[in-house]
Image 1 (cartoon, rainbow, N blue to C red):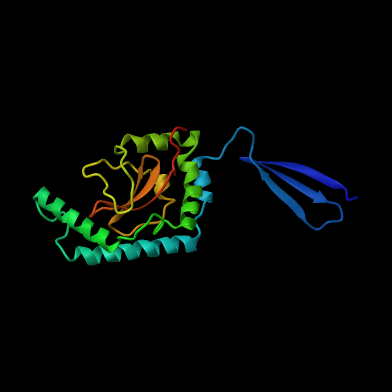
Image 2: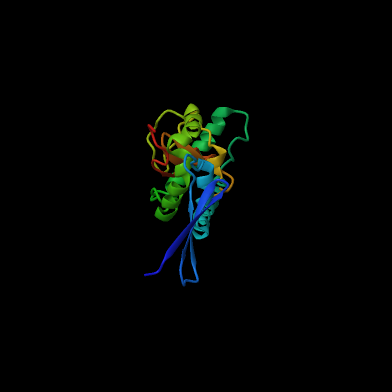
Length: 211
């Protein structure tokens, strides 16, 4: 039976256990977190790198949506170009109506497909769940709008506040084309069309409610 030798080396921030086997050419190295020190949410998020193919697919879908948005927007007056707020609201609602008609068969998951949804949930978990993410959750909830029925093509309530998106969460999420924004509503990640003020897609329960 092969004899085993184990040596323990102390390193800054972690312990490394090196196990060698007699008459063997390989070493087995295992990094062990030091007792009493836990990885910060940002450290965990930094390791949760999103797959490039998933990100590319999501961006392609977002770009496709914005091409439709631009096409339909060119059929009417652009938003926020007039001083009369009521006229801007009418223009916004007209764009929203055209988008709903063009996307009458839109469903949750059209942009946030199942693979990107799973990847984003994993990547955001350290930043939005658990005791270490308490401050981030509190900042989001401070500016959160009242709960409303969440539906693709549904209105984001006119005049409703938009929760702050912490920078550490935004760093995880794929970049968006101009005209789209991420927001967290209740515990859900929502993708909003700013000019039409409608929900484009969403992911349920990315943030814990009571933790």
